[in-house]
Image (cartoon, rainbow over all chains, first blue to last red; front, side, top):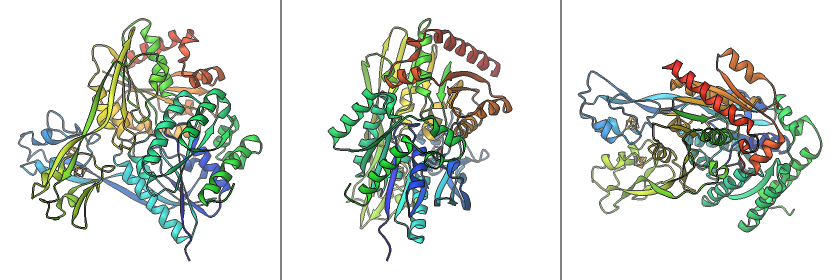
Length: 293
Length: 283
Ligand code: SF4
Ligand code: SF4
């Protein structure tokens, strides 16, 4: 019988709070899982996990292309494009084009065609911790949300094939389309924040997004000793919102050292930081499988 | 001159550089600062000023008249974003996928689709002394950020210098911010993640033909690969900001470090002079 697959997504709202380094540590601690790197815009997990890709698939998006011969200069495309992708001289800016196809539809001369363009790749890989689904969006690529959805589908297929019980997802920063796509169907969102005024502000927004889409958030504070006052403010916010805190991870230069060596800190060393991360994982695990703490 | 402060990776210090740069310049001239990271706008935390004015930003969203709709499904076939579908005789719009392009309204043979405006966020602004500050904010739960960035950029007065704090990454919101910039200042940190994401940011700037240079923040941690990368690729390394507990603590408390370390005012002013001459050279 197939196990019920759980999906844990690690997000941060604000970038640079240590989301990916934490995911790499959780990968070293968890069992029976597959990984998904949904930060398709700036994927970094592979730098620590060193995956061996065994399958690569191009990701296509549409882009408008114009046949100058046929263009009569009527300006219909310019009037209708809502993305500012048609210039005053009716040329198309491929970077601004969202590939919606409106211009193709409205052009009376049939001068515009939608063409497929490779805007990224998705991968299936093996890592030292098991299988991983990931992707990379080319610079300036559109439709990051759709590529995230593909990575999640790939991860689900992998977990079903391998009969795993957990999908561990590295989410993307921000609160926009890629994050929303990566939240879909998640069971639990682990929010990694830092005790700074910006961290607090961004936490409030990302927690709101998780709750808006019906995913229960947990919060952990990274670099927690940077400011005790701010750390307390985060804990107060969480308790007001009924969000469970799952730990504090101290600021530790060894995390970067481990990264430079292509390792997660859990593999690299022992001590206070590693113990704190283990504590976070225990609490998250208990929440995923509703085990008593 | 428009300077976009950008980075492939989040959390490298874009906001630190943008706010300190704006404050340093404001000692001697007028400056506009735009927080284009509308998903997580944080610059205001570092500026003590009142946002007196605001404007809503709307995106159009299709609405289907179920009576007129005969479930032909052409809208859903044409929509590039899988945002509209006929489900059990009812045509539904998925707002978290809709880009508001208007194609479904145009293609519907029954004219069953109309559009209405949906508020996706707002822009706000205020000024104090020499700084004119603008910020945008995407509503929690709404996915599409670029129209808010566009609305922000419409506020720019081209006769004065403007500094744009860009969202992280290299996808649509970052590209929208970079569009039309005279210079991209790429802020990174000296780690393998920082280098990987910097390479992507450099590629976007190149693709868009925007001259660019690098600032290394938290200089002293990690390794020195970024310096080597800049040299090899002839990308000017314009500034390094040391990894320093005091700077980190000031950041944590929302205090721009130029206020406590005035020697940085001259450094940021010199940075802008260097950027101007790089922009001139490029012209
Ligand atoms: S496909 Fe859409 S976004 Fe691209 S140029 Fe045409 S109308 Fe504009
Ligand atoms: S407006 Fe565009 S994106 Fe939205 S449902 Fe219609 S065709 Fe799809």
